[in-house]
Image 1 (tube, rainbow, N blue to C red):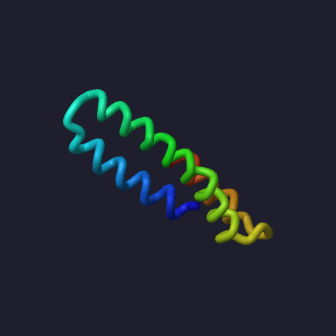
Image 2: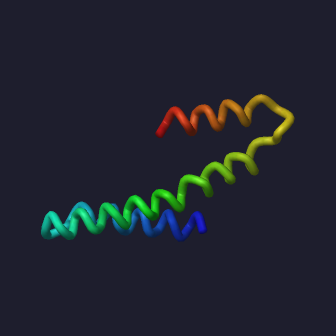
Length: 69
């Protein structure tokens, strides 16, 4: 699911850059937002899997992820 969201986000972002009309841009940005919504929970799951629950690094990883948004 993460890969699907990533590919969709990248593709629609490129298409937004070359959108011929404002209507096409708005439609592509809508699809871009949906694909970004697919990425968010998957990214948090990847962070959870990558950092052990015992250490304090998981909190820092989630904090850094939240600060970057």
